[in-house]
Length: 233
Image (cartoon, rainbow, N blue to C red; front, side):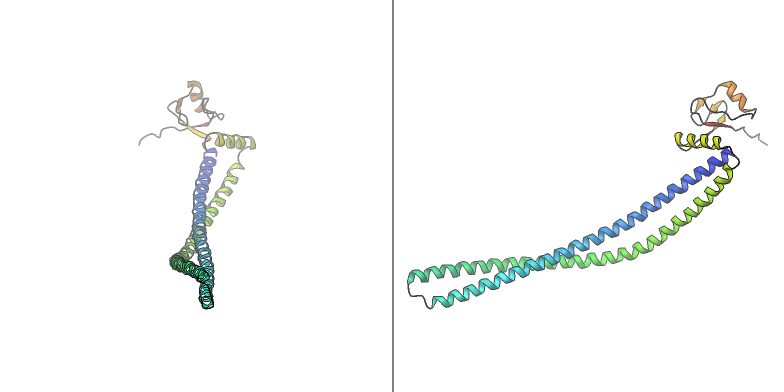
């Protein structure tokens, strides 16, 4: 019964490990899609910011052009050469400012176009990921549910086995499993404990043949199970 209990527990461990792996894959699918969506949001924000900066430059550009027109109009009414030269310098500086703004506008338009192109590609990729993620999520969840059904069945089987064992023995078995990496039992063979590969005291090994009590390895404390070599036919 202890052998069956260990077999069931090891099966449950294996199933849970597989389930955890699938859940990690499921989380990875979600994280990948979330990351792609965040990139889309970032590019959309960059696009909005770029358009705002472009609009601000256009407003400044229009204002500078108005200033130039106003200054050129005022030049017709100027009487002195000194004032004429001062306004001329202002117009020259304003035209230089307009040229600089136009250069910045061209750069900003180019940046917006580049961002928009990247955004379109990223959105398309994100849509593909979302469709693929939905399918993969459904598949992984089905696998997880199937494993959970196997775990539930194994737990029921475990409960049936433990009903035939004393509570103290089940507790000892459980503690040993936790202390010995899931292996509470060890096979005794040819005078050795196969759990820790240590030599067993001869009297203890001989007592195993009597099947009178549960005996443990003095080295690793695992409960010993005697396995006799089957005679060859």
